[in-house]
Image 1 (tube, rainbow, N blue to C red):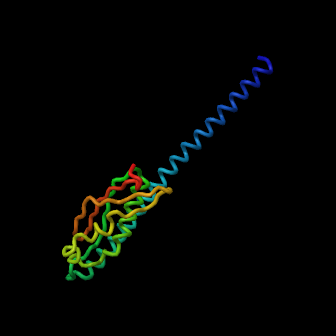
Image 2 (cartoon, rainbow, N blue to C red):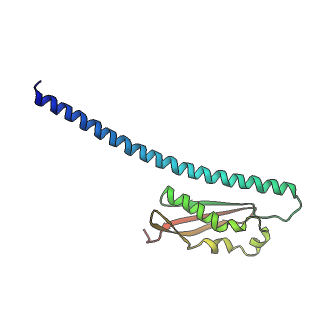
Image 3 (cartoon, rainbow, N blue to C red):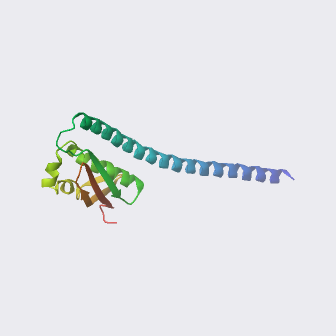
Length: 154
């Protein structure tokens, strides 16, 4: 082996190490992003469960009260995980004020949740999304199912 071959071999080894390192960083970045979305999802779920515990504890201490809306549950069909997560959070925040209200209010005016959410927009990573309500089920657990689409119609 002469000096030129040694240099080529060393250069190829260094280039391979560099490319492998870059590939590893890209893979780790994607994994961190996925785990971050998962943590956000479980954090929201935990907050909802803690809120439910508080409401059920209060309800147990005051058993003869009128039925109220205890929980807002949202399912969203969206183009990607991030827009789905944001849509669920947005709809819950929009309907949050209904929690603790008498159930009778929504049985008289069942269109309220859909009217509050239908056509509303939110932004994720500079992309605007529109919410369309598919289903509303009224009960102590207010259930809302929505579809999310990009605002530009794609």
